[in-house]
Image (cartoon, rainbow over all chains, first blue to last red):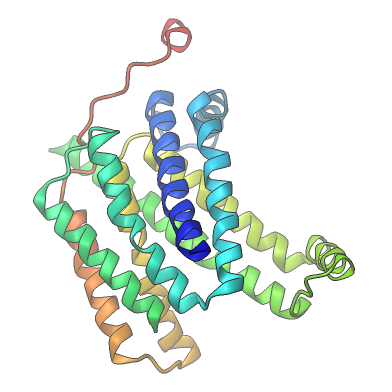
Length: 122
Length: 146
């Protein structure tokens, strides 16, 4: 019961956090060139974005659920179960971030999700 | 076409940086924590673990790499789709298996090899889609004015 609940927190927390950060980074705008000074300016702008700071605690919450789960269950259970976040994340990208997820990308995501589960299961 | 190719190349470079930093960071943390030993869950055990981790050079190198991962992740998301970068980053799991076989001579089960193949095919499929499918988000008014 608690395991299922924490898995939910792990998957939804990391997805929500990464979606918030993605939105924040798109609003920040890309650095013109990948040079140290411009990257530094880009990061300064990113730090002033509210969406970035909304994403950080969500990712922290997800990270702590991962630590607790790893203390209860073996890694070969936890990582395969959390691989579902690839599918949840893609749904979020499509419906919240309005990204155009083509059939090829969907098939790729599902293959990655199953592949990560198999690799982590050992 | 030239513009499209440029976006693809810089996205690829950043995803490679992400994967290398994440794997190197995890490896350093694992090494550092192995040296420190199993953490005992008690007040004194946690205090000892905290002191041992903040004074351990390997742990700090690990944290440095993981910071590099976070920064490259943030940077690539400023232009590329989340649904492009996220699955492509899973390439790291496949890479880790190959490194374990080549350098650590670990035995890898058939099930894990199938997983590696699925990840590689999946990443290739995602990789050939357009890295960016959304328009630039309307900037916050204050930033747009600047």
